[in-house]
Each structure stands twice: as structure tokens, then as C-alpha cells.
Amino acid sequence: MGFVYVAVAALSLLSVGQSAPVTSCESLIQTVEIQGREQLLGKWTYLAESTNIIGSKLLTNMFVESVWGRLTAANESDAIDHYQVQKLFGRCFSLSTKLSLQNSTILMEGTYPSSATLLNTGCTDCLVIHSQYTIGGSAFTGLQLLSRRNKVSAAEREEFMKQVDCLNLPAPAFLDPEKDLCPDESPSQESQTIDLTSIKNDRESEVVNLLHNILNREGGLSTLIKLFSDNVAALKQK
Image (tube, rainbow, N blue to C red):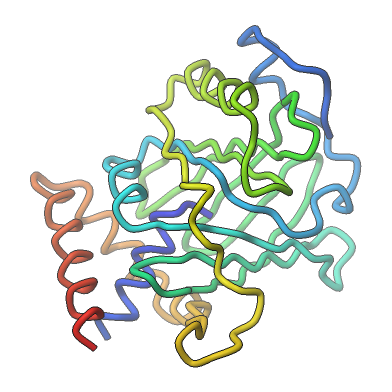
């Protein structure tokens, strides 16, 4: 799930297998066979993302502080429950989605359909996820770096940047590893996590159309940044 999509969902709510190090592009963008969902399960920290959504890097750098996710086995043998928590505007927002694993491809259906594969990486506790997704009829591509750790080495960071370059994607947005992650649970009112799942289920079409319309018109990125900024200012006054 891309960082910007969750940020837009938050705005809508507020408004209402591994290998040795690789170097060549042929190796860097080689897909990895997923032996079973067990290798995907557990808690992951999202460290970086590149996508050809216009303005994605700028929006991520401006508003996204940290992201983590947990993948757990669902009742169906090929299904995975994905729980993601982002810190935006100084607050925590969560989103729950269901994924399915078919022939080494991770699928998500619905208004925001996507398919993803894992790419080869020399990072032994990382996932490099190459995604294809559709927003409002427009197709986009993205690459995400996840790790069991909150920070990767300079070599691992450089490898991801090379993968981005090999796929002809824009320069990635790296999240600050010094930023605190949202807690697994909310111990106090001040750190309460706001669940966006109902927004996804009840108003996903509206959120997707908002993002699609803004980013596909002249001055749309500036409009989106202003919407975020206005809402951040309103939150700080509360």
C-alpha cells in the first residue's frame, strides 16, 4: 500500500527469499520465488518508497514520519492480513487490508487493485516489493524497501537506489530512521491510533477519485499540498 494513498485517506477522514549482494540490473530486478506466506509474516518497518505517482516523494517527505506493518496468516490458506500504521501530521493512522498470495505474486483486490512481487536483494532481513497498481483508471508502478530493522546499511540503501534506477523510477523517498514509530497499542489518549479501515471500506472510491482528479490536473499537486497543510494547521490548533 503506497504511503500517499494512506495520507489521502487520512485527509478524507479529517475533512469529514534472499540471496547474495547483486550489482547488475539483470540481477537487481530479478523476481524472487515466494516459497510460502510464512516468509512474509511478522512486523516490518517501511524504510523507502519510489513511485511514479506525481509528487509522491514530496508529499512523503513533507507529511510521512514513519511507517510499520504487520503481516499475519489469515484463515484462508493463501490469504494474508496486512495491518499498517503510519505517523502523519504527528498522529498515528492504521489501515487493515487483506492480501492473497498466488504463484509468488501478492494481490490486493478492490477499488485500488494491485499486484506485487519480491525482487532480489542482498539484505538478508529485507523485502524489496515491486508493485503495479491502479488508481482511478491510471496505472502506476512502485518499489518499496522494508526491513525487520529500523535502519539499513549504506550498502543496502545504495542497492535499493540502484534497483529504483534500473526500473526507471523517480528517486526514492527515504523515511528518517530516527523518527519514532507509532506504538503497537495505544497506551494513552495522546498516542491513540486512528483506524482508517472504515474509510477504505466505505469511501474508497471517493478517496481514489480525489487523488486521481487532483494529480491529473494542472496545479493539482499544489492543491493537494495545500489541503494537507491546512489540515495539519487545524490539527495543531486543537
